Image (spheres, rainbow, N blue to C red):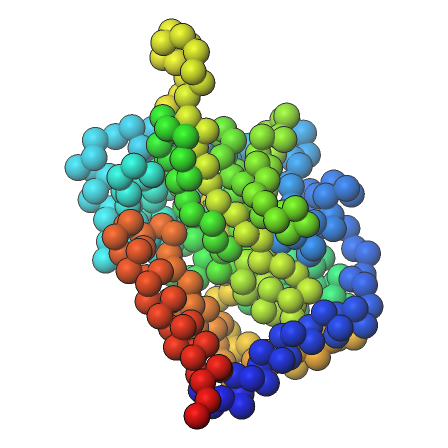
Length: 346
Ligand SMILES: O=C(O)CCC(=O)C(=O)O
Ligand SMILES: [Fe+2]
């Protein structure tokens, strides 16, 4: 990249705060399933809490059924689960990372284990609908028409024979020891929904410069919404990509009898709504007085190309530990090269 472009981009980023101060506030639009006190966090922090609509909530009901099916699936023999291993790594099928977790990523119905099919179809449709309803309101907060962002996600809201960019992941984390079982990261999609059967998810609080154990604050079953890097990019950074990690809190140091009754695993359901790859991205059509002029305009690019571009810049927290370390080193090397380009002179 030419040095002038690197310097210009850097300066533009530095002037971001001045520019943002001048932008009008987001329009006050209610996000469904999000309590009034939790509304501002999605834009400001990149995460917020989902509260279910009581016992009749169809999303909650579908998640309960999927948790049951997921627990039964992970209890099956390893040879059977391993038959869902694919060459797509963490992007599809079953995976195991020793010392951390086992998970299965569902992308199409054909590659979904029969034990999970019907609850996965239902939970996918429910979560897809809930996230799209939020995305419509997010668009309105930016003074855009409701379909401005859902046009990217609409083809992804059902689990069927067609592979889309969206995915449903079921995790079983090892819970015996106190440690981080998913390293700090932000998701790549538009919005993610996360629900754990026990606390583990921690979100980045940018005002305190620290991770906050959000699930420990849930006194009744609640879910968490995370803003992803695509939403950050398509909203001209008016929405943050929420940083998060998963921590295992270990077993309580009480009597062995108590310990024996404790569940050694944390199960979670993660639904990642991403922009459908073939759709063309055009930030001119997403520009309003609220977004302001785009810092990184995108035109003549598909959502898939944008995704690959973003993916290359970040290591994958759900890949094996060895590969993960390799990816981290490669990214550091790339950033160092960019930094040298920026600072070098003759
Ligand atoms: O399992 C969870 O609670 C979150 C996992 C996660 O952040 C991810 O897979 O991107
Ligand atoms: Fe994540």
